[in-house]
Length: 326
Image 1: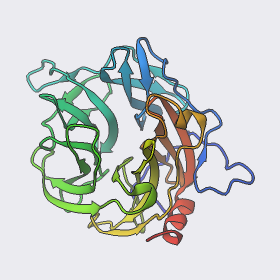
Image 2 (image 1 turned 90 degrees about the horizontal axis):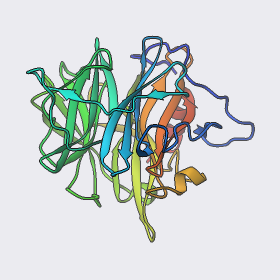
Image 3 (image 1 turned 90 degrees about the vertical axis):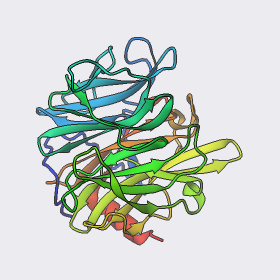
């Protein structure tokens, strides 16, 4: 399966599929790769976003500190598995050269578009959640742009190239609390400030994705459309259960869903996914894809406490989606 708009990542983390594994996704034997206390004063480190950077990797981490404030930190790695994370959280600059007041921030994604890296996250604005955007070239200075949307919104996921001449983003409109609903929407912008052309992409349906769905990692462009990994939520007798699924979206009209998995591709099973601050959660925020081999590595938060890795390939995952689609 050819990746159209991807890069070659020679040092992409990789572990071969274990003998006898029948799943389309397989977990790293090193999980969790980031523990909850990996930096000073951290309570938990989980839903985080990785990109290739200067021959290695850069990552924006979600870390809740021991006051339980939700913060964003930068980290760097040579191999994508072992990380050095800054103890101090990111300070976002404004256009005047000062620093913006930071209320809270969580569940970042990072997307490279042309020569810049863009961070999107759930940004606290006057006590309300919306989607923050910042740009960087070096992961040292971050210029915060205007919030993408009015509150309430979460899970802002940019596409890695312009579509119809515009920047494009997936989001999940929400409410102020722990939202018991959620659909994925698509929006476009000429300048990352003014957003419109909103289109519904996906609603909840049955089973593991019956309560809400939301965007996951940055979509991967293939010769059959955008490969999108997303999260779905089931309301059980013991609360929410977060799993991951995958879909193929139209290349030029990404609000059109060509295929969508009936069954999940990853769901809480391991102890570190089932036990933590929020039990029964797998929450993917990153996929790295090597255009040469088609290998995909998925970084996901587990139980809102630690960070884990899983693996698949473009061909295997695309075949699974098409054979197990609604």
